[in-house]
Length: 74
Image 1 (tube, rainbow, N blue to C red):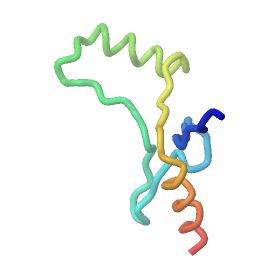
Image 2 (image 1 turned 180 degrees about the vertical axis):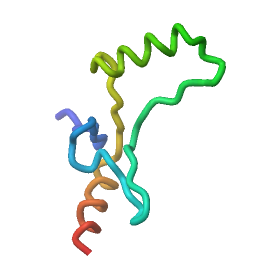
Image 3 (image 1 turned 90 degrees about the vertical axis):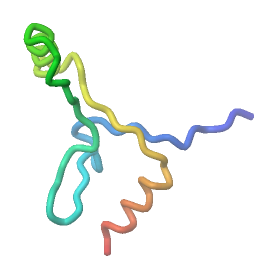
């Protein structure tokens, strides 16, 4: 019998992709480009992100995901 993974993948637009501490709401995942990234690479990456060819995803353990869902009702 094959064991099922306990990792959940969240994508932009999925419930719980954004996290909050009650003051700030932010995506769980994103992109960070180094200041030393050449402008032409930065431009290409931004074009790919804006076109939807590159998308942020976040991975969380299902247990952590379930706790967040349960605690939201509080």
